[in-house]
Length: 284
Image (cartoon, rainbow, N blue to C red; front, side):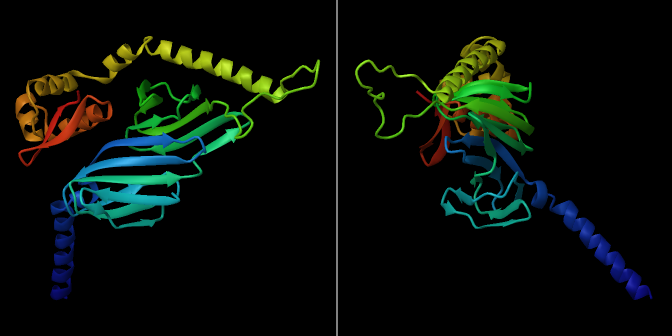
């Protein structure tokens, strides 16, 4: 009797200690950023950039089942397992990139495309080039540009985005139809409707951008905060390692890496190797 009680007590103690000593096996990683790329064919790539301790067990819930998964770090690919809507892997690197490809996060209603997703981390949706934005289901967003494409910065949660792609000219049919003598080319009803949609969408996009204070500089001022400015001013002096930036700016480790990642994505900062060390410097 006493031996059974002792054994049960020991088991409870071991389970309690394991969950206390090793909490990082569930939450011991930081998602630096999530980028969502929309392509003209309707496919979507969601990219997670993760900072973690080596040999950490990482689990990421996915919005849908991807048709392709690729996970890699500094020295090569990472083995993973996908089961029940969750991708799980053990990272041998401090920095890991997870690329997920989907075919069922977008749809089309007439000439209007829509995209729906629910991601628990803050994320950025990068639209195809020359796309015309129609509607965003949320008010808490910021507009910016990424490589000449419109990008939408969002906090974690659900969003639905509606947009129109620019019309494409079929291959081998770039010239207008040639009628006989006296013939007049009349555009079809579909072309007229698409033209009206494009005009209305362009006006809608203009109003969206005006509502965000009217220009890229104002949007940029909203995105960058005091800590971002402190990092940029520090790097104006010279390239620095992450530890040197922590000591110079007083910003803790995790917030510093988040801001460095954001500044790198925005094109202000880049990584480099100097004297065998990885440093951050201003991108010229």
